Image (cartoon, rainbow, N blue to C red; front, side, top):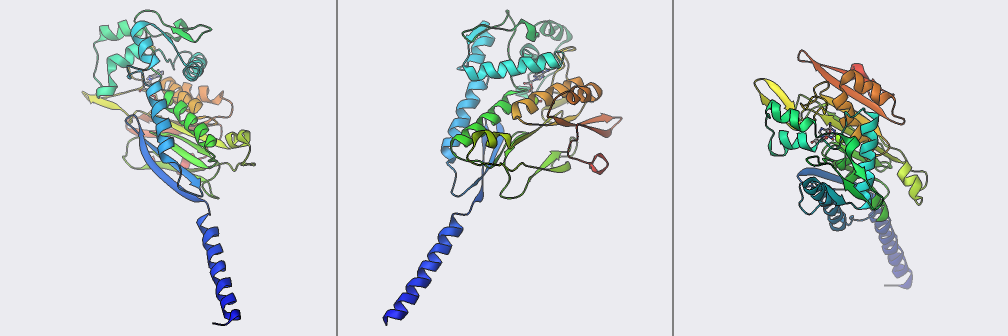
Length: 345
Ligand code: AMP
Ligand code: MG
């Protein structure tokens, strides 16, 4: 082989190698499914290499255990069984956010709903409690009686308890997003049982999010396109600003039927019975914790009051669906990105 030929072969080899290196380093979409306790969790990350899934899911497990009042090692469990517990800062932050939404919703959202949710027992499929029991438990639900002292000690009167089920999923999803940022990922989607957070775009396009049909399994009333491009990938503040969260609370998530009546897992603290003014509430907001709490709150408030409540929430839009005589009807607030006439109700 002469020198000229060798040089040409070498040149072609280097060219192919460079093309291979460039294409293999191109960002790709990676997906992984897992569990948030018993709730399905999906994480999609745009990355140049396989994400560090083990590290990510270990973090998810630690947060889920911390925030689960059923976990006997969690401070929430201690609070519910003894009336007093010292909480880590992250739980205090969530409790404070829950108390804020409780105040704004006039107590429709109430994190001290525990005595009632324990009675309805939706963790084990749900059961219709006796009226007397409901009346007794109702008196033990009042977020105004929860006290937080300077050293993070939370105190509740005897018989009361905390159930952060209406806000914890959103808080955990926000926490996962912060953790993914720490690991250096800036474009991703996290979905945990109806709570979704997106940061940045899916490669170069918006994310497509289906809003579940409340009465037809595996069907959507609409699909919305969401996503915000981050202006500067290296700035943590910019990355956070490119987040959008969308959360749905629905009466189809957990319910049982008795004598033709549907009893769902979201309880109206005023009556002690499941809220029935809406069948599905979807909220879009800048954080998942907020979208989560607001959707549960609006669900309890029902169609009209829920819409009025969401209207007052800055940076938030919503879609509420109700059922009247077997027919579904929808209303949106603050420019929710769906055309009402085009919904598949
Ligand atoms: P979500 O699916 O986010 O709407 O939350 C439903 C969960 O919130 C229930 O499973 C309970 O753990 C909790 N919950 C039920 N009723 C209320 C209420 N009125 N206020 C706050 N949390 C509630
Ligand atoms: Mg919620």
